[in-house]
Amino acid sequence: MAMRQTPLTCSGHTRPVVDLAFSGITPYGYFLISACKDGKPMLRQGDTGDWIGTFLGHKGAVWGATLNKDATKAATAAADFTAKVWDAVSGDELMTLAHKHIVKTVDFTQDSNYLLTGGQDKLLRIYDLNKPEAEPKEISGHTSGIKKALWCSEDKQILSADDKTVRLWDHATMTEVKSLNFNMSVSSMEYIPEGEILVITYGRSIAFHSAISLDPIKSFEAPATINSASLHPEKEFLVAGGEDFKLYKYDYNSGEELESYKGHFGPIHCVRFSPDGELYASGSEDGTLRLWQTVVGKTYGLWKCVLPEEDSGELAKPKISFPETAEEELEEIAAENSDSIYSSTPEVKA
Amino acid sequence: MQTPLATPVPVLRLPRGPDGLNRGFAPDGHRAPLKPEVPEVLEPPESRESQEQQARASLRERYLRSLLAMVGRQVCFTLHEGVQVIAHFGATDLDVANFYVSQLQTPIGVQAEALLRCNDIISYTFKP
Image (tube, rainbow over all chains, first blue to last red; front, side):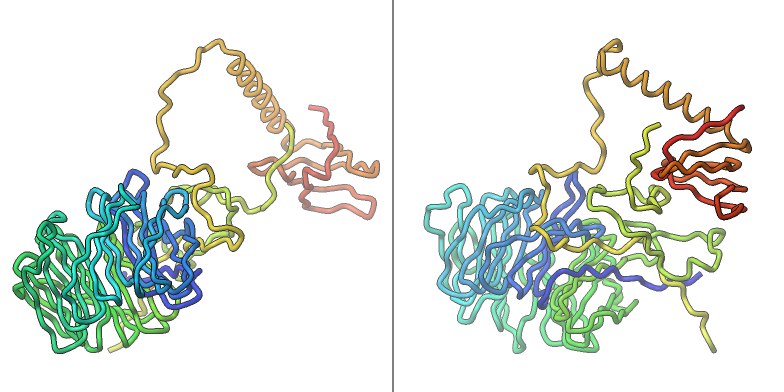
């Protein structure tokens, strides 16, 4: 029985979603943070898209957001010339790091001790999060605003992208090691530690380079301008989205286009695979985040697989259960039948 | 060639959105772990709480058995405003919030099937 992809739409933002990031897998599951032009980045449960909280404090559009590996800290980059570090459990603001211009990108080291920032002032900054009062180390060299900056090679090197170049820097010496030039604007960059792969998008191209040598590995052309792409953790698939509002899924080895989905009502700005590869999230100009299944029809998160014997014809539509109270915790899929039909809590004394 | 229309993957529910009231996050500052924690300390078997719990459990069991005994019998319900109705008891729901009855004798006639809300019932009696 052929199954059609049912994307899960996460609403809440009121302006375009421009960046998103997943945490690593933690004992509490994994998490997703979204950066939005409404200035209010949100934290969500990664496998369901359930809203957990909103980080309040920025006074301008938030251009970049990231979580540390165990999702205890979040960092955001905003148009109010600051980057902020947050406690991702309580939602409290921990640090405000003043910059001289719009900040576009933030990234934690693996141990969460350092934060890398980059923005329109064309400088890379490294903040020691254990010494918030100390001045950051600065790396200059970019000739246009920095769009993305990432730690790589176990935090020994830094990758940064501006409009037309991607540069590799050595952390210890703070000097440029290598650079790549493009004749089209670089729209996004993703770093895959296992295999040291760099995913770069520009124009309609999705390119894969070695993160160590910057040498090209392969590249694919999409039917439209691509704004963001992500490689599956097992490197079987990649997903990409851009100006035609569609999401494309390709086979990484053959380059064959496997699936494409319409759904967003505006250009897609960011797309990322979850750390377990079971779903990917897309953020769009239309102000929504959508979660998509990697394997359509699998039981995972809020998606429930229906076996042929269970299909009574009524399950043709996506099942939406009754509205739930706010006190309910993360539910097991098997607990579906325990939803109470009558909303009043039973007060009857036996 | 017409391909059959594919069925959309069913979902349990939609992702929850912001509640619009506050900024969210864990209320007590801690996240709920995915797997429930195994209790490490076993309470002493003869503690006061445990005795009370056992009493509650046996009282509840007696009540549930009384409901079972009532099935099919004629029961007299005392409702608000001194209203009394007689009906054949059928069943209650899981939370004992509603009583499903048949042949309900009301002041305005006999109702073949009816649902009495527990909140409306003050007391009921029956003879086994």
